[in-house]
Image 1 (cartoon, rainbow, N blue to C red):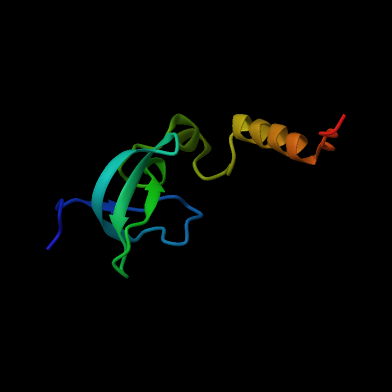
Image 2: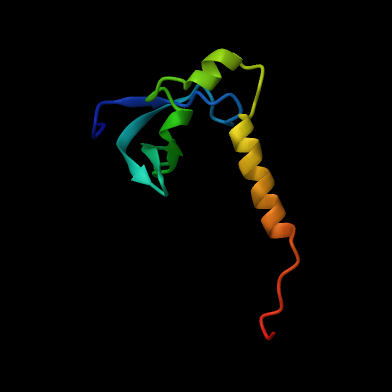
Length: 95
């Protein structure tokens, strides 16, 4: 018997479990974002970003892109900044 009686369906187009529904255990902020804890088929309790489920309405970008764009410009710019930072030569610590 379920603990919440609620189900959550994974809706992200690239998630390997897209379309599958699971028993929702809880929903709360973890690692700086709203996440859903659900009971997997093997009994474990994985988490997933609420935005990747039917617990949240698709954001404006996803509605307008209608599946034609996988990334937002702001996400790509953040990725570029991260790649620049990790590919920059490390400064000598003994200087």
